[in-house]
Image (cartoon, rainbow, N blue to C red; front, side, top):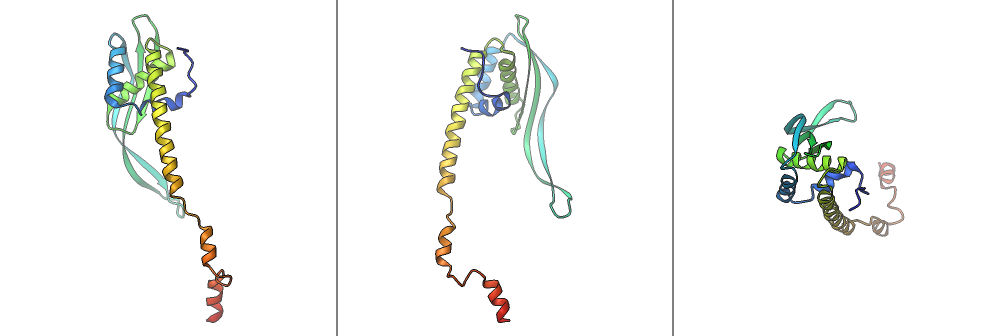
Length: 168
């Protein structure tokens, strides 16, 4: 397989996360059984908080919480190849984030197993595109055509607030 990917790196985790968790972890464990994997930063799992600014007073408030796992790793193969990978995912699952980070490192460093992970990437992108297409179909079927309301409104009904004010 060609070791060039059309999908930019920023999209890899999104595509790979479409693969079933267990299938991805099993594939990565098979590939990485002889590799040395060193954390670049401590793996973290917990809650992220979405902070927003209120528009009128510009005061900060917390909109909500979401699960977040973050992993940064360095992979070394027995052949001496090295690459770094990372993953930040909205799941409370460090093992899954680590598997995604290893995939990121394999693809970025074109390590052994590149073809297998690239195939998973292609499969995940296909699943994502199918889901996105279905979502767009649903979204298009729920559109509201407000132009039909113009037929229901009479020619004198456009300025009802002004007419009410004149009557008072």
